[in-house]
Length: 495
Image 1 (spheres, rainbow, N blue to C red):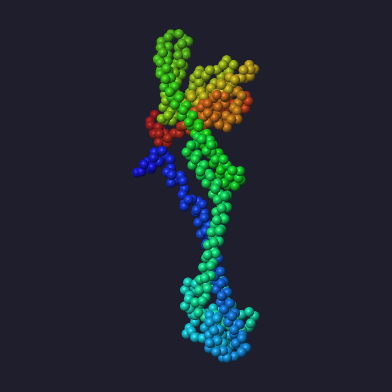
Image 2: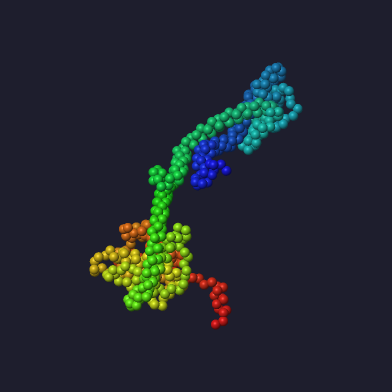
């Protein structure tokens, strides 16, 4: 393997032969050649009736000349012509004999060496288009040594004139005519191809070449805004393609910028979490000693503190492993939702003016991963609290309510707040990281994380409504499907 090919494979860039198209294989050259070929094909189709018409015209011209001579001879005595004169007349016409038929009687007027046989009889009065074209091709390709009998009326005369002649002169004249037609056709093809090429190159090939160069240039440095194509003000398909390409390059550039930002952020967060995990582990060891304190208040808050620290350590480890794996698949169990909502309430930094309502029934159960569902509800509730915390008027109602209902095998958890509602930009980019934040300085990661976790459960997170004074999110989680073989096995077991 050559060094150039190894370099191409190592860097992921296309070789120069792929990125630059030679002139011999370009669209312009193909268009020019195809135009020449198509015009020549059209000329060939037109040539057939042309050559047939030329053949008939040539034969009619010779027959007309023979008719003029015949009329002179009929009025006089053909025998009065010497043999030399007869040969001169026949040589001028290119014939062997001239005859006239009048009233069903044929009369031989002038004759030289009478051929032993006639190879083809041509009635000029009954030659059609198809027969004329086949006869012309036959003469052109296979003629030259045949004897023809050409006959038919001439003008308004009631006489029929006949002419016996070889087809050598006819074929020679047809070859010269064909050569001239081919030369003119080639000139027309080149001229037409150049005009068509110039027009199409200006209208289509040129813009396509510009788009191709833009794509190649953009692929070399997609982060450079100067390499985005500037679409022309056109309303045809090329204009639409240029505008779509420009928008696609802008979206791709924006996405690459966000990906780079995410990569940098992930590296920074991983470094921070590496040290934070050690700090949280130390806090865990210290918090374990709180269980030994006999104070009732400490005994009430110590379990909540320990659960919070356990979750914090778990999240820190998940962040450190995020670069290598995705979110782990949910470990689903039957979870008492009311207790989980109480744990969420205990971790929220809620002002005294914000009312929290846990409207979930005590017996309500949901089939989900408790840690992941806790993260989802924490993100949704924290967003609501932060939105309502901006309201400083004491008369404004600030309430956060969590409720749940079951519809068959589907659990639906609703988070409703009385905040100001989501702005239009947040609603348009609801679950997009760094774009769906409802407050200044926010990252929008909470909803993105919630959407990813619930989707892993086979459910959905949706914004039911968002108006001033009421914003509702609904989390829908279907129960795990029951495998038929396990269900049958459980029914067969004795009680």
